[in-house]
Image 1 (cartoon, rainbow, N blue to C red):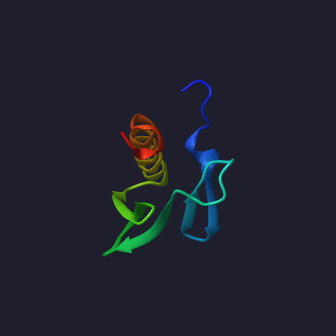
Image 2 (spheres, rainbow, N blue to C red; image 1 turned 90 degrees about the vertical axis):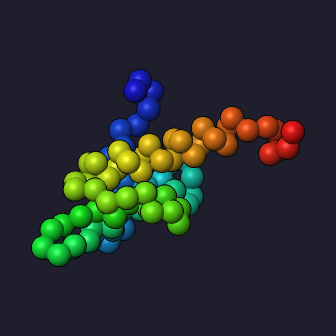
Length: 86
């Protein structure tokens, strides 16, 4: 992971219980983590854009899952043809 930021540095708490992740060079966030109560348990809802990634049991697990989804999405974009055309 040399040369890459730790996920905690990409995370910003917008309001209590809501975190957004964004790269320092971007204006818009690429995902969010929401603290939710499910029954009597506390869970973290992880979304990448409008897509639900899943639910996590800790903020650290949620951050890692969201960062992995972002990297996967970027790899798909970079692997495609120039300008999206063949």
